[in-house]
Image (cartoon, rainbow, N blue to C red; front, side, top):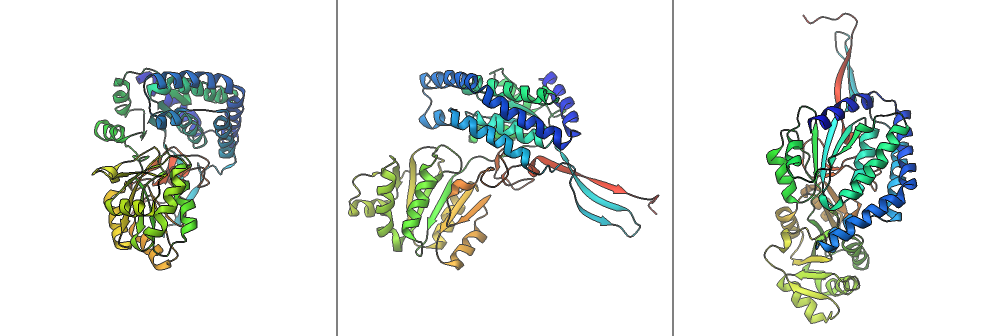
Length: 419
């Protein structure tokens, strides 16, 4: 681990002074290598999937693990898109001239070496590597054992692209040893690593916060809510709820809890239940919501009484919590009590209610009349993301290029001395 840290630190110094054109050439080379080596990557991914099924991984986990030709093409497109984005490194901002003539400014610089610990999703390997490359950061990656072959294949792709462009392959390293002790060692490699980003469940985040001697960016867990207000456009609301829940249920910005104003519950719940039933969604409903659904005869929908922990669960599956509320006050109170401050949305035609929801819900992303599925680096125009941060220091929401930089003060003088 010390050797990995040393190599990453040395590579970060080379990347930190690399010009934008050189970094962009490396990104384009990585995209080409992804397409060229797609067959080999898919072969390794198929072996991981076979082991995952044999080991009893859930369908949600298998979906997160799955790579397809379409997903690899999307990763290559993301790498090319990042090459077109403005390079934040070296940008100066907040310039000022002091009364003594000393000119001060803040200049963006790479953070240095970023350690990322993640589970199941091999696309993270490419997302992290390309964003770190563009911002001059080296990366040390540690994925889950269930995706080891896929991640090693993708790391090989990245290193081939880096070396084609004349940059050090050691700028992106992968910890292949599945022993969990390596995670603890990485968390204490503070001599070489500048930031840790965990992408996984609550247990991984807790481990990193408790064990790391390196600053940790937490996030990526979302108990996401949609509140359907009394004034909502109900047909449009059905479409939004379906998209938020069904489009990709295994990701952190997928919908977990649906809150519906009592005034429209009888009209709305049967419609949304029938729509969601077409995708096999199971509803975990409160007593009042169950009564409405039973009275309206939504036979196709699978409705189960909500349990005590159901509104504190990130489902990552085709399950949705459903609750009828008396109004905006109760909806806001529920979100504040149960949200992980990831992504929450209000569907309404009442501007005052929309503004109040936006002002009182302090999640990383808050929406009005839109799906929670937009909380994503690519959708936000960031190219890709290292993580979705739900903490309040350094970065919030999708972490793109600027969030992978820090800054230094630069002063230009003409012989000034402090009196």
